Image (cartoon, rainbow, N blue to C red; front, side, top):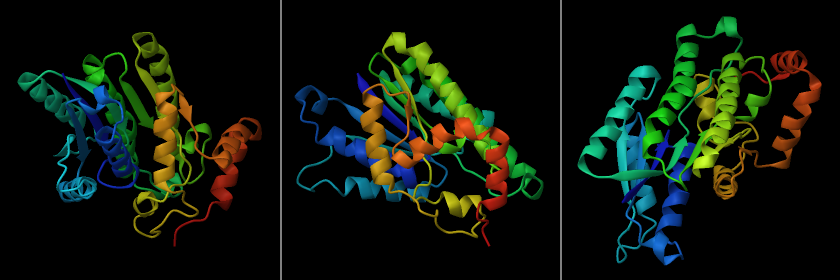
Amino acid sequence: MKKITIITGASSGMGAEFASQLFNEYEFASDKKSAAQNREIWLIARSNEKLLQTAEKILSSKSPDSPAKTKIRTFSLDLTGTPGVYKFDGLLKSEAANEDFEVECLINNAGFGTYGPFDETSSEKELAMIELNCTALTGICSCVLKYLNSGSQIINVSSLAAFMPLGNFAVYAATKAYVLSFTVALAAELEPKGIKVCALCPGSVSTNFANVASNGKRKEVLHGRDPVKVVRHCLKKAKKGKKIILTFPKWKFLSFASRFAGKFTVAKLTYKFAKRPH
């Protein structure tokens, strides 16, 4: 039976890095049984052009004399809200009508943030954020359940912001708190079936996140970590059954310290002192 890995938000950043590392893992598997699997990696995002560029870059790592065993497929979809979930569900049903498959790995990476005081940000954008970060993620998890088997895994990308309310990031932090809570509960429900579920909770990572969150005013995440290291650590811990993944000691300390600082205190401090894009 064909095995499929699905990655949302796969056109750049951590989504593209997840795709790259899993492709290499599948292609160069030392285990003969694993190496012989009929596998596909599905890259899903809005920009078809960026998806094709990502796929081309990943495939270029293989020698022309050694064609890739793992097929990469790209799907240009806007997953926002219930309409996005219906599109995704239709994609799965269409595939199932042609060939039996199981979802070996689902990585819910699609999402974005909006920076600024709540009364200064676009309500339309804040609501769209909830629809993508929460509604789409939940719906996608629901859609894939029937295609999961023992040994399958789900990785939901949450955030260090999930552990504390953040001034200037009020809605974003709330959406990621939802993702963390939902993921841990889902992990408990699916564990008896042999399905591993985890939440990746990164702090600052060098991706396009800051550019989107600041409406182009800040191009780079300050003190951003290397997505290669974040993804590598995540995949390693996810296989071992870790439920909440915090890559670096600083992130672990901040998540721990937030329990004692007080939610209102943390929100007030981040609102007052977090550097604002200019």
